[in-house]
Amino acid sequence: MKKTLLSIALVISSSLVLAKPYTKSPSEVVAEANSSDWQQLDPENILKIELQTGSVYIVLNPELAPNHVANIKALAREGFYTNLSMYRFVENFVAQGGDMSDKKMPQKGKKAIAAEFFHSTESTLKITSLDAVDGYAPRTGFLNGFAVGQNEAGTKTWMTHCVGSFAMARTNDINSGGTEFYITLTPQRYLDKNTTVFGQLLSGMEHVQHLDRKPVTGQAFNVIKGVTVLADVKGAPSFKRLKTNTPIFESLIAARKNRAGDWFVDTPNHIDICSVSVPVEMEDAKGNK
Image (tube, rainbow, N blue to C red; front, side, top):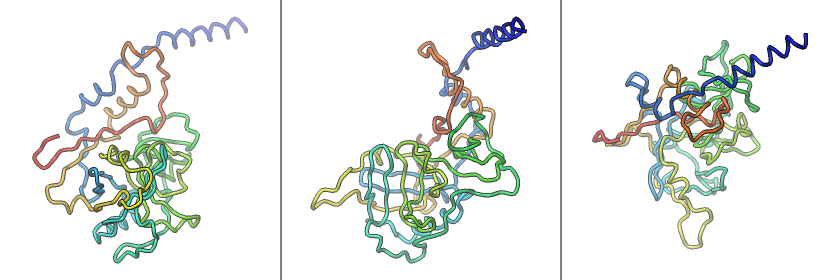
């Protein structure tokens, strides 16, 4: 018996040693994508947040949080955020914006709406699964370009707090969120299912990172010049994102699990949900990338 177990162990060990790492880099995988592997994003579901140093673009997720998406679009279209501020910046945590006084009342949008911490379905909602151990969710993967977690049955689905996640701040009342948004600067997975995540940053993190950390007496603090729905912006850029339900994206996951190249001496054959960035391309009105 001992000899048999030892033989099995040697076979397994040998197969692990001889296993070849993935031979393409992530950039090489993306370069092989053709036009059908990309999804043109709907400008009706993209926000443009204009800061003093430049524009930040957020793609919204109406599939998982339709009420939050509808509400922030209504707020944007009524000009609610104009001349408000990104009033909270916590290093390596979040940048938060809106009405610091909490006194401004929306005219068309709502001050508070019911939480949408997760989306429920009667049957399993199919995702591109990572098939990886995750301490925050039984299942993780991608749904229509967004990083998500799920319960074991796949009947509850939520967006995860990875870098650039766009979510609604709240008080202890779970239904108090409505106007005060935040952008995560680093992964904050412990917040999953505690707030409503309803979007993901596409472009402009450098402008978020350039926000002032503390107010200066006599100076305007991190002014939000405006928030608009991209469909309403004349001459706006367009965005496309790599589809996450394709063989190319599965190859991208594999390339990130085991990085190719002579520099890498350790290939763990593992990836977590916040380590897979979905490629995005931005094109201006003249067609320049």
